[in-house]
Length: 282
Image (cartoon, rainbow, N blue to C red; front, side):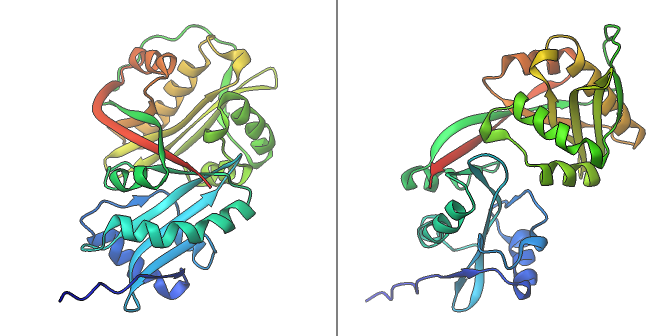
């Protein structure tokens, strides 16, 4: 007779779990989702660890940001632990606190695609796929003359940046003012485009182990098609190059042909990588 594996114990992550979570991130054969400064979230009710005989073997952090969506910001699972049983034990305990915080959808960017086969049977549906593009040269095409000017963002710009962000993107992709301000402080570049005191767009990028990644390019709908995206992206690239970056990547939705034409024009080339984004009603 075979012994059934002991059920996983699910509880909120606490500061003492920090070393065990770092071990999961470093040594699991499943590449983790790691998209936030998770150490600051230890103790929050939407940061859960799964324990097997009191040993943390899984971690899942979901954070609401803006609009109705909470994103999985950290997901790590030890070798030998099934994804399905882990999700079955963890997801029900996330639903109430996330709804209490205003979220109605839980979204998961499955960059390494180890979670997807278990997400679909548990109510997740494919929202989109993100195409990864890369630029490995410093060539840029000439830009059309523009009266807009670039400058670094300041704390005083955050309210206007929030309004622009929500006008430029649909709700699943909105950022909150807190996230925008965190990006302003922590990013390798965060530039905005302005003309006659009017905010037209912004670009944000961060250094990575392989170079840099453009995480955000937003242009207000009224200024789209006027070369502002070109101006912002060229300015962001120039700033990153000044910092010694050689290779720059970015992601865009596979259905966003307008953005893909802009990135192609500036020398970004698509890779074979297609990242599924899953969503589930809470």
